[in-house]
Image (cartoon, rainbow, N blue to C red; front, side, top):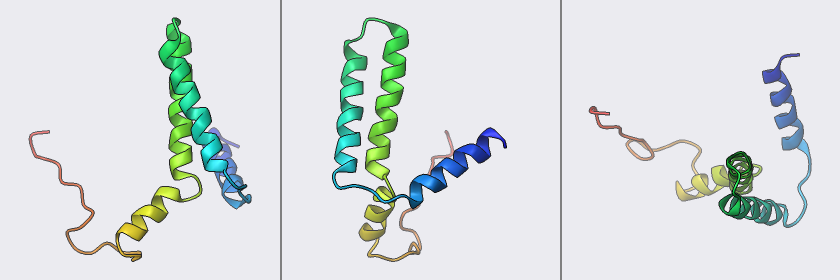
Length: 95
């Protein structure tokens, strides 16, 4: 079993498990605490580790089990498909 397949198996198992009330708030709080710890730390290694873990947890709290995907879908009127021209990212050619 490769690392990629193990990560995918963990993601699938996590998606199938039932959540508990307030899970996103608990994860968000933990992530914010880690980010605050990263800002106060004097050690570069501790700053990097706490910052990376805190950022990952804040992202997890925001997305959770489709959290951001649900918000985006609701903002687009509940449609699964994007209408022409909307929701596209345009990058300037100079970049």
